[in-house]
Image (cartoon, rainbow, N blue to C red; front, top):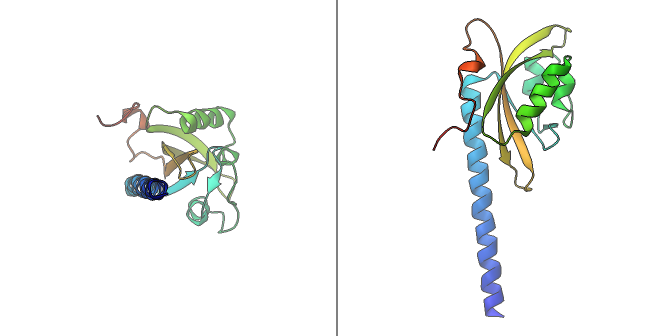
Length: 153
């Protein structure tokens, strides 16, 4: 009985430590993306928006309620090739990626954006994706100059 209690406590403690590590890693990724991007979004394993969408709505001039949680992010992309490229990036397990796609703003105008994406495992054990978006212009370095593989050792 004591052994079972000890195992239960150890398992619970291990799960808490792993959850904290995942939250810390996610927070670090969000912080880095926020430094270079206009907006950072989180996507679930189906590449649907998770959490608040106000920053994305503001970025796309859509008002605070025009994009709902659960909306597939590719629904904002009018071009099929952009949707396919984003899907490959969002499901790639080879490390951080950067791509250029077009999204439609609230006025119907196409905006060229650079999307920086990284996959991680959520607390539920399912893959998730953090994506940072910034308007792509002449002052931004092209994504092709960024590392295309795993970053770090």
